[in-house]
Length: 59
Image 1 (tube, rainbow, N blue to C red):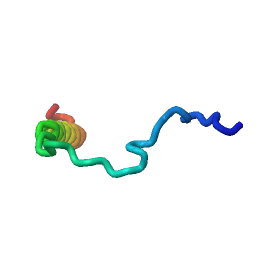
Image 2: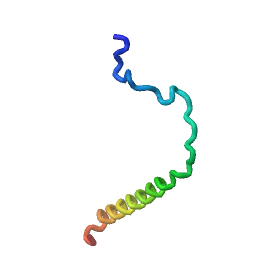
Image 3: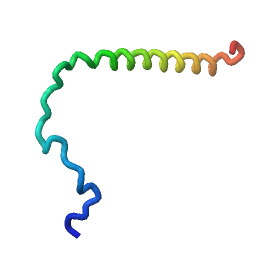
Image 4: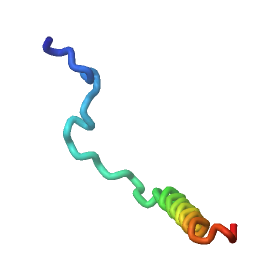
């Protein structure tokens, strides 16, 4: 059954060549800021949960 591969219609990314850099790589700053805000919120929630486990009478 040659040619009946499951992903037969999927082409390789740029046929194995290295893609060129984006025109303006500095525009990814918005995503970095969003990730940092998410990291800070996740760390805050983790600290809150650990404190609630250690001192349940205060919550």
